[in-house]
Image: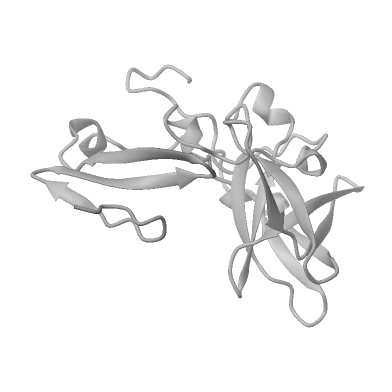
Length: 188
């Protein structure tokens, strides 16, 4: 019986368990879920900074030439060349910062951002965020309150992307999700 043909991975189920095949370049794995996990039922939310209007910023998009890609490394050390439609430049505390945006959909861009809070308060590698593509005026809004942790913050069994070098900011973004805690309340 063929379960994975290299393109479509059906979800298989048995009782409370569900699994599927995932592929990361030439590596394959099984992703397994238990739909009756008591820890999931006890979940009360992610630790996060209070929402702050100071982190709701206007950003200019400087478009890249059609077909531009940038190297993005994952936690396994694999490098993919992801489509980058442009660079978003924003001002915070009277300083300019820029991040490379990745293509997410026709309407949205995907950002992988590292910042100074990764050292102490937020997940050590990075955080993710989606933003609307710029309007006709070339601007979009970055709401850093929407930064969220990648799956790698919660499990060693995921293959998260790391921020491109240019997206490692010398700025402490005190907004969005903080470093997760384990079930005993200890910071991971």
